[in-house]
Length: 157
Image 1 (spheres, one colour):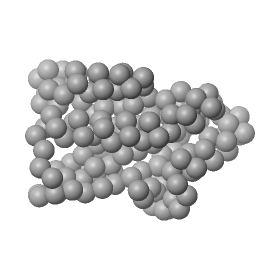
Image 2 (cartoon, rainbow, N blue to C red):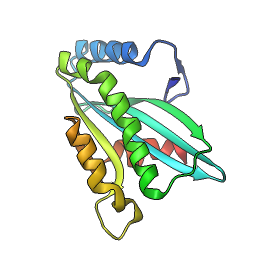
Image 3 (cartoon, helix red, strand yellow):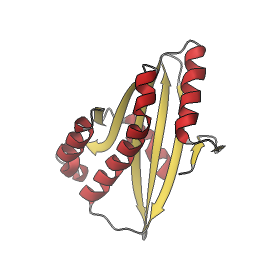
């Protein structure tokens, strides 16, 4: 899985080691960190592009993120696509959760799903929330899910 920084610089280490180094570096600088993980997708012709982000927030001092993109020819209903986004976020959260516990870093999984029933993505809200909470992770949906609805969205659009 290829990850990069927002400036395009490729991350050569395994993402778990890069995250560990970021936590150690930022906490040594005196920052209290919070990590938000989210995925967004965009259908472009026959392709569906997914972007997963790991957003590091330095309490009161901005933040930075790591990004992973992938494209597929698979076709999804809106509900399926929302749940694939959530699954991609959970996959990364699960891989990294022991680091967050070890270094006492709060972590949330953000879902690009609208809480308003008038929006199509709302069809997946109950399942997504159950999936994330069932894995033991903190859950945020729109409008609070900025990692997916703003950060990852910026990457796929």
